[in-house]
Length: 122
Image (cartoon, rainbow, N blue to C red; front, side):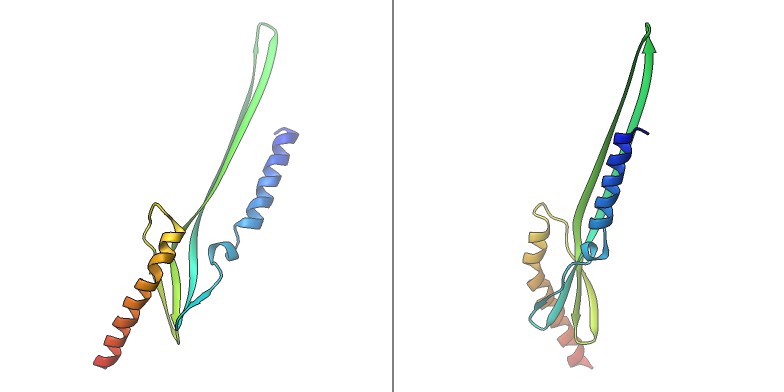
């Protein structure tokens, strides 16, 4: 592998060490009324590299190329109230995380109503 490619792979590895950590996957908690919510993210990454060399008519050549990708998606929220903890999935939408945050109050309100119904029956 060429010196440049080694340098690129080292930089990419450093980037992954910095970005793909628990704090990235499990976001900062926030309060919403009596609920404590923690966003949960899905990480995806890929890395590809190819290279080669050839000789034709006493002329030589070589080439290489590489690519990397990194993406994040919200998959839901860990929601706590008192001693209870629940995972509330977010529906995948075209507007991403902002849409999930917009829906969160309605989801939590429905959850709280169901829990009140359960408590009233007991």
